[in-house]
Amino acid sequence: MGKSGPEGAVRIPLMAFGWALSLFLALTFLICVAFDLIFPGYAMYETWAGLLPGFVWLTPAGFVIGLIETFLYGWYVP
Image (cartoon, rainbow, N blue to C red):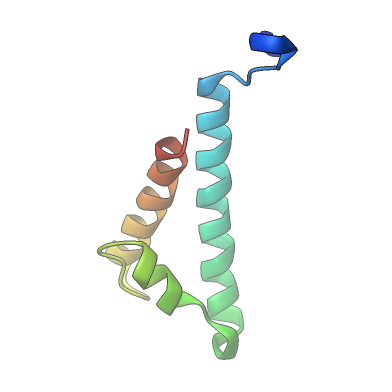
């Protein structure tokens, strides 16, 4: 368990939260890319392009940029 804060609230360690959220978002990005490739009629890559600056669909550089940005967004949130 985390340390107790004011009024008995349990605090989540920042490092654990940052890593967990970053890995969750990166994994979600990978799953969405796979889904878009398997089911192109339901693709969401246009949404990713709006949320991730520099992301270009189906390019190696765009894929790496999207993966890095989703990971970094996980650290930005805490």
